[in-house]
Structure formats: structure tokens, C-alpha cells
Image 1: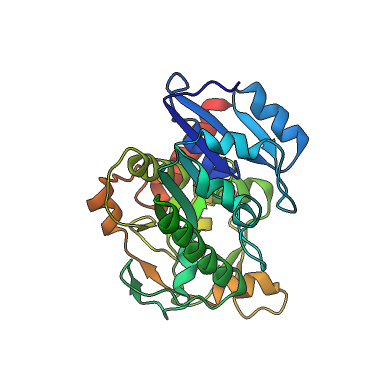
Image 2: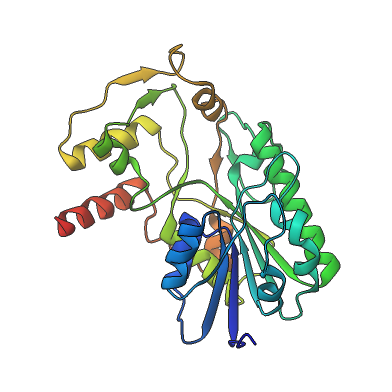
Length: 297
């Protein structure tokens, strides 16, 4: 019989953001479980004391009903698809019936706001998703809110800007030779360091905040080419050449990414969750990543 810890977190999708959160939790008071997509990843997480299940989204996973039954908190970071959110499709009834579950956190994207022609948005603005993936995200947001309302649970949406952190940043792209300085005049993007995501989610899990949606982003929307240039400067690496946005060699996914422009406010998360950004702009975040590489060398 499964031992019941005082608090139990279940993560649908132990990915980059969920890992940062898991690393913050005290294993003496938290039981942690979640899903991965391969047997190898499941073995690695089990070796770290996490109850890991293989779930590829195509069918219900054995053992998840029992694991969800003891969860007090649920974090959803796995993306939806054109037919909906796999966690809801295959385990929605298990989640709704989970007797201890009180809090659901859904990691969404600021992409649900769509293109705002470079103007500012905050949580009061209605989502206007334009891309297919953003529409799937918005549909998933609504579905999770509906499940929570029907089953007496709280659902909090975290709309994330472009996520970066150690191992997944402009620093890593420059080091690998993959970095491109794509230039579209006037284009700026918000970003969010993975550790700041973890801080915001933890604050909500602990009971802070009353809103059901928060934008998680930095304080300084910036041109993407400036971010790459700063990373190259930190590393003392050759500056990647500028590539105009209308270059026909750019792929469709890249063009789609650059087709939307908005500047995102984060005041609500700061005020309501007490969020203090460890990395309020890309320069501080990239400098910390570069410094950690020096310490490791």
C-alpha cells in the first residue's frame, strides 16, 4: 500500500520547468510523482526518488489512477495537441475524483494572447490566439478550468514567456554553433528564467495569491538579436551574423514565431504572489549561466 505523505505533487510532464520545481521541494515533506515518455527517463527519475510513470499520451498509463488519488497538488506542463490535452483525455476522471487534490497548476504560454502589434498586454486582456499551437493551449486552459470548477479544485494558469536556463539558453546556442541573430525591426520578446517559474509556482502552491491566471515573464522585452549578441560577448565567441527576417532560407516555424509581437506585463505575479525575479532581464540570467560554466571548468 502506498504511504501517504503530508503533501504530494504529481507532474504531468517532468520537463525543464517541472525539474526546477522538483529540485526545490523538501523530500521529507513532499512525495513526488509524475510522467515521462520513455522507460529510460522513468528509471533515472526513480533513482532520484521520484515515482515516475511512462505516459506517451496515446492511452491511459497503468498506476496513474492510484498515484493521482494521493496527490495534493498537480502540475501540468505537457503540451496539448490538436485533439486536446492527453492528461484530460485519458485521466480527467481520475483527476476530478482525486480526494486530496486541491490545487492544479497549468503551465501555458503568453502565445494565447496572439499578435498585439508590439503593444502591452496583461492578464485582463482576452486571449486571441492565432497560431494552431496557441489555440490548442487556450482550449486546454479552458478545459482545465472547467474540470477544476466542476470538481471543487483550484486551477491556476501560468502563462509563460520564452523559457531559458542552464542547458537551454542563448549561451548554449552560441556554444553549439546553432545561434542565429534574426532581425525583424521593432520586434521584442519577453523571456523567463526557469528558476523564476519555479518561484512563482511554489508561491501559488503554498497558498499565496488569489488570481486564477498569472503572466510569468521578465521585466525587459528585448530584441532577440541583442540576446544572442550578449551571449556571444560573454563567451568571447565570434558574433553570429545578422539574418533578416525576410530571408527565404528561414523555416516556416521560425517565421511563425516572429509573426507575433507583444510586450507582457508581470505586475500581477509580483503583487499577488510576492514574486521577486532572480533574473529580471536576459543580461542577468545569461551572466549567471556563463559564470556557472566558468565554475564547472
